[in-house]
Image (cartoon, rainbow, N blue to C red; front, side, top):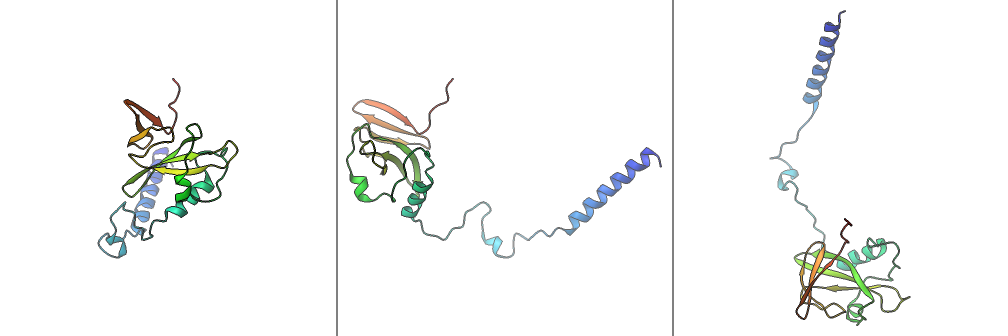
Length: 159
């Protein structure tokens, strides 16, 4: 056999495999069955939100850093009401529940004490007296008196 015939047979074999493979695939009809009721890309979740459980999971997995001590439980209203000194807190994250945005503060009341969480929204004051004006996915705009400042969740890369 010549090289031309070998190439022709190879191409014929590949095309035959493609035709047989395509013919064997079943494609479900988008107009029939339970899949038709769903909008493509839409999340269907019938569970009710459980903020306490979500916060407990975040505290256990500690996405903000493994060097931080673990907390004993999810935050409560009592821990949110505690007053703290300006130097004992930092931003732990920004989260959205429904239409509400929250700034998560990691607060350490004393140097060797465990961290607890405070959840603040627009208009709330930070421990150092700055008032939150706007929140984005990675920063918070704050104001103290006539000075405006941006607190970033992540450091900007050097350079």
